Image (cartoon, rainbow, N blue to C red; front, side, top):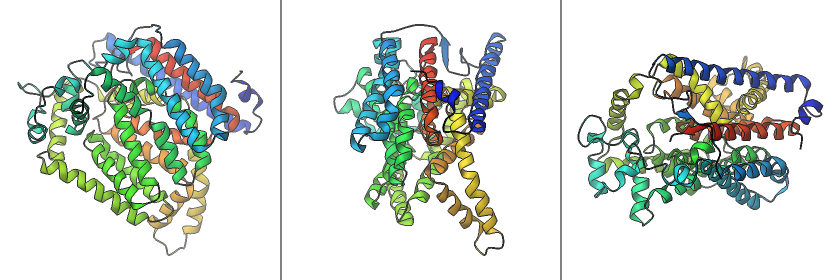
Length: 470
């Protein structure tokens, strides 16, 4: 199948728009190439990037594995039949098929590195959560004393990943161990299986917000997510799944679902301090609901408050943990990593996680928002309605395929500028990347296979040229 043919024919998209997309693609290529070249130069000069294959936290090691043919088969299947099947399949069958394909894609990419190195031993280094699981003999005592062990250079200091996150992240793996599902293999599979649920949660969210056709168009891009390289295997796959599920429940009808969504989003605050930025996405979802916005927001807030109260009563105060983790962050490699490089190189890492479709898709989403924005500005002149109310109505009218990527972009921008995300964002930002990809709904049908092929090639290149680290 010639995936380039639609770009040559340009049968159902204006030539100017297709050309603009290719210009954006060119800018993306230049950005990634510049980040790689500058990274090589800085590493050669001994600058403390602490990333051998900057802008990614990885090392250069071209290799093949027995996951290679499986990854090629999954990619060919989704590119060849996924787009049409997404358009015609029944909703339930579509979600099941998408989830299974996402699991197959993630597993095959992990197995490029082999069963042991790519899966079962990926979470066993000293810096990982599993290093601490067997040391937790009393969960209540662990929560009460968690903050005291965040800072480094003390005898009982937590391992790097455990210290860098609230206790909910460690609790996930402790919980698996306590119910008889301990060990690195089960933990790795949990990351894959939970991470793949974003291919269900994001379309469910869009459908609940009245955009089923958009959900069907976006779904193949969620399956062939280049970020699956880091879903399999890192705990950030679980984090992405929890956040997406919480937002999906917040979108569907019913206050009970909103409350459960609030519980999940509240728990997400105890998976990563950075997930306070998920609040921007949550507000966008509530604003896009067709009814019961205030009631749904209150129900979700009740769920969040319940989780916060539980952890606080158990002895862990979130703000104390946050202030201590900022100190711990600067006790380590972050003190060496130059902000002047990572503040823009992070965007290159984001592109390698989200794929080359990100730029063109976001460009088209911005164009889709421009028309309603101009109309609203014209109507507002001389209107007695407050500007905030007028513009909130505009954003709701733009729809979820504009507002959700916009919210995700704002969250990523804030995280990047904070200086607390220097490197490793290809996995850290996974929970936001999947919502940026919602903008792919604006791509015309004739070029979707082309961009899907670009997504697959990006993932295959990363997994075969680099040895990634979780």
